[in-house]
Length: 204
Image (cartoon, rainbow, N blue to C red):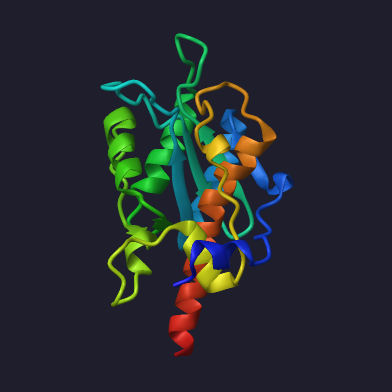
């Protein structure tokens, strides 16, 4: 396995472009996202939640759901500020149909909490989900595998994971460009890694 020092010496991972990230807000956006996502056999999947800092504080996430095709990422903002939060029910309909679909495989890293929060907040029972954190783990590895390590292993590159961005407020009505790219990459890179992993398996 690559060490942290080895990973830092690798060339940077060239993530998804902003032009290929779609914020799903309107009914028209939702329809376009639905069409693209339902045409896929596999999609990348992740969520982001506003961080909690106080002891005993319960997360109100997820506040963002990211779904990615091979070419694009679709970001769905869930009940964001202001108060009371506003949420377009058309977005929920897309998420429910796509995430509960038995024919579309959803892949990502560390998805147990994401699935749990979607069930609790939106009543979505995500199905046909593959957690790459454990699926990509080699026989002699005890620890789960993160996206950063997977990118180093499969692509020989370093995935930049900024803790500063991770802990930002994901419930804001307008996300920054850095937030958008960070979130989109989380879902998109998972799909790319899955494709490479399956290709390598086929070649063996």
